[in-house]
Image (cartoon, rainbow, N blue to C red; front, top):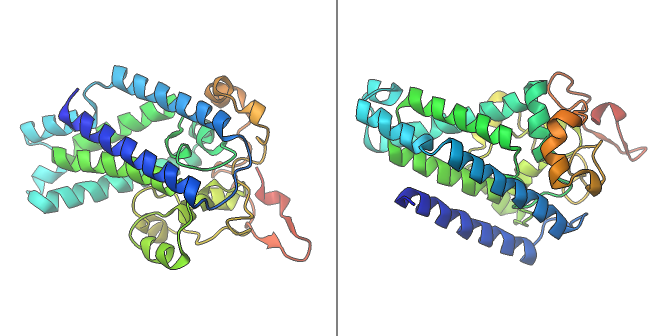
Amino acid sequence: MTGSTLLRLGFFFTILAMVAAWELLRPRRPLTVNKAGRWCNNFGIILLDSVLVGLLFPVAATGVAAAATGGNWGLIPYLRLSGIAAVAVSVIVLDLVIYLQHLMFHAVPLLWRLHMVHHADLDIDVSTGLRFHPVEILLSMLIKMATVAALGPPVIAVLLFEITLNGTAMFNHGNILLPRSVDRFLRLLVVTPDMHRVHHSVLIRETNSNFGFNFPWWDRLFGTYRAQPAAGHPGMTIGLSHYRRPERLTLPRLLLLPVTGDPGRYSLDSIGGDPSLLARGGQQDDADRG
């Protein structure tokens, strides 16, 4: 096991433990389904993802970065960037690609079928941030490696990005309570749990917003930012409107969901109505459900 792998694992388990403890001490929302069952499903997928990535991509993104650095090819060497500038530009560009990739998995109906495994979770917590269908993870790895090959970033930049992306995914999916003033400041710099939770709403327009994982700037820049859910965080419904029964979301069914499941109307080809709660009737517009 390499030093970079040990470093990633160290950060992974440390952040996982910290966010999980935070969720127990200061939860943002009450859970709606049995946590033990959800975690068995979620960490089962996470374990399968890790095994497949390890088997199919033994070199991974840092290996591609090392080859690019050794061969002096890619955009970063072409621009003659080095040191902190090279690391900063690399991390920012990689994060933009992840934002665009996330948008693509919502925009393309076939890719949405894979991505809805992530969104079908009936609660959102630290485990949700790592729950992605194995095929989506493999496609994501190919996109990341292709980006690294074209960019030619320093190895340290890729390692830093991967650790940060992994950590922020667990943090911003965490069921954790932040003071409003802290959240308002933090979301200028990083995607916060309250910001990303909007993305897991059953309402179509809310699902198709707040795509960022690390930096919150892309959503504001490209017009996909929504500050708060229409129903408020305690009152919003998490997941997909047509998958509300836990028995339909077991590990085997989740793995088969892209080919056997109903994608609903969540992908961007059918964006739905504006997610406003009708205060007079207290009901949600049916056009905004999947």
